[in-house]
Image 1 (cartoon, one colour):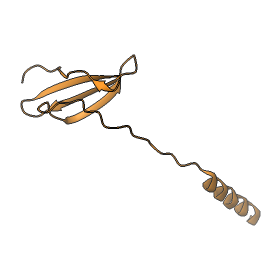
Image 2 (cartoon, helix red, strand yellow; image 1 turned 45 degrees about the horizontal axis):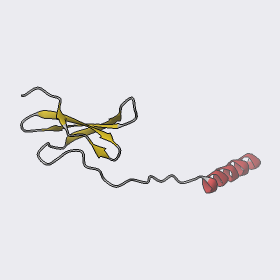
Image 3 (cartoon, one colour; image 1 turned 90 degrees about the horizontal axis):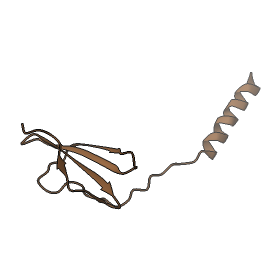
Length: 84
């Protein structure tokens, strides 16, 4: 029993000591929503060509906007909701 416990502990300590840490490197911030277009609940996805697509809302008046990233900048936001 002691051999199994020792082996389990040694294995756990070995894997803990050799585990690699992960780090995220963030790029500089790129704005996609000009002043006055809100910033409510942004959602990010990528389209078929791998470009980022950002969807967000504005509370008053209620509206939703979308902008597509391309080469370090974003397209002019387009309102994708109907008025009201």
